[in-house]
Image 1 (cartoon, helix red, strand yellow):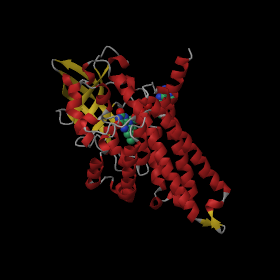
Image 2: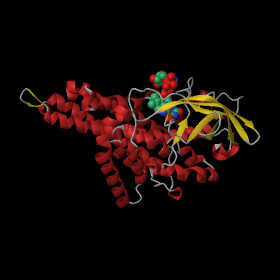
Image 3: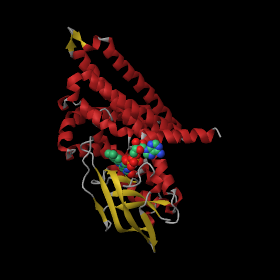
Image 4: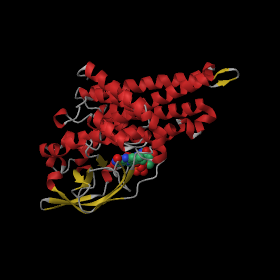
Length: 383
Ligand SMILES: Cc1cc2nc3c(=O)[nH]c(=O)nc-3n(C[C@H](O)[C@H](O)[C@H](O)COP(=O)(O)OP(=O)(O)OC[C@H]3O[C@@H](n4cnc5c(N)ncnc54)[C@H](O)[C@@H]3O)c2cc1C
């Protein structure tokens, strides 16, 4: 759903300008230093990028899902590490509060998330519970007006920068499955919360993950999301449905960028006396990539519109995430191929994208988990 085409066009133009003029020139520096410079972060805040999906009443833009994926296509025309910094505030690190938080929780945290004053992280994964998220072992034991949280979360995006964490923990030890899980807002300064060393990753340099360790952290009962126990896993899955559409949009944007770079290179690079773009076997790689990007983009827009219409998008979000992230991997592979030897060298940048986009097929539910979600829903609907 697009509320006001004129405002949206202006927003997309300002994002595209920022990406082209400020972020693209900084890609290799950020990859080398593993840091996004403070002045760029300040510009991201000024542009409102931390609050795109937070409601307007809390200082965000309140974008609809369709508007948000269009912004996502624009943002993803550069290294995904830039997006990663503000993505959790728009997505998994804030949506638990947006979707299911109490009024007091919204008032306490959302405006600070929208402005980028604090970063929100989403802490679901644990050392022994990844794809099987419902088996998580972090505990939250009620103690008067507090919960005592113990456990370790793994690979948490933006944890080194985060001010708050949405933490899924087992509040009912008797229940081993999803029903016993509740979601909490845990502030980084709460005693007993510590961070592991920053992870050394294949890509996404400039974006950081690490373990988050909870050792008898006393969390006020008022920080139980929604004020009711046992709803945490449902909250996490709702957050991930939206997150999956956003990862799909990011995959589309990144694939568009890689294809554009490959076309520019193919026009310039000459072999056998002519640009390699004139060879039909090279053209096939460009054409296949374009067609697949078009298909993925159509899926993302359709899933986004359905969500805006209030429909359940569990299947569509999984389809879009699976197809778009796998498509992005194929486009990355072809782009490296079009570049030939240059594709393997870091100075041309395409190998960096190749490594960066590999993540899209793994996090927020791997491709295999999307297949399971799609099949489970299909079989349930046709029973
Ligand atoms: C850079 C990065 C950032 C991340 N950010 C966050 C974050 O912010 N918050 C958070 O909570 N988590 C985060 N994660 C964790 C991520 O969501 C998990 O890594 C992912 O869900 C997979 O879990 P796992 O790594 O434990 O793999 P596993 O679950 O061990 O899976 C290993 C392999 O087995 C396959 N597999 C597992 N179960 C099945 C099955 N039933 N059928 C078929 N195949 C199966 C998987 O598809 C995969 O190929 C992040 C991870 C990375 C790498």
